[in-house]
Image (cartoon, rainbow, N blue to C red; front, side, top):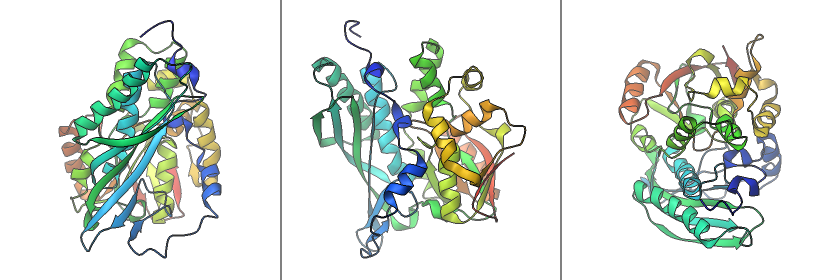
Length: 348
């Protein structure tokens, strides 16, 4: 990287999915928008905070559409592009679909970044799309005060395989496919406290495509899925709990973590988005009375290109974890269960 140019992260007030508006703020902004009930082909809209919109083409097939973009959480432009593209494509997999093409979303401070840097960002995104087997078929760009990159992604699926937030069943086991701690690593990186091994772990996690979601969607024992991103594990779990009308129980000791996540959280490397997330959950989330601050930091940590939170029949959880691990997600774990009760989350 040309050391005469500014660090990418120095040009942004936030990075990755930590840039997202707090859940409570987003809910207020969307509360007065008209519902889409007049469009019977719209199978999934914004009503339950699902990962993507789903539109029926006929009795079997549907189109899945999403968009996701953010500011850089790392300084390497190619890595930034790769992370942003992986994160955007994930929404299609989380709904149980397969991506077919993408459109690029680009906003760059052209007076601060060189054309070579911007090309590297685009090349990083294109490399992940190639890995997913899809083209970037176009896009839109603007001159922007802060660097922004992402994708709009279109996918295909079948009605029978669409996985919505609202479809968890009482008794379901809850699985998580990737370790958490991405936001904590990002905070440490910005302050020069993340070593090379940690950076490699961060990139490996955030650029791993969640394509296992398309496979899981065809398994009848899998009832619901979402990807864990900027609202943290608690925030996205809470969306599922509220949509399904159930209470989730998470076991803190079973959470998969990035190797240095606990130590860095204890050292105070926590993002501002983590605190905003916690303030948004309200009384619907209950932590153990003796919970350490570091546990709250992990549970609220904004994930960028995080794993899938999967609800499945309890008797099939072991088989599914083994299948997910065999597909390259070695950190996959059973982390809790769903049960009848007031919608919310208890952490044990």
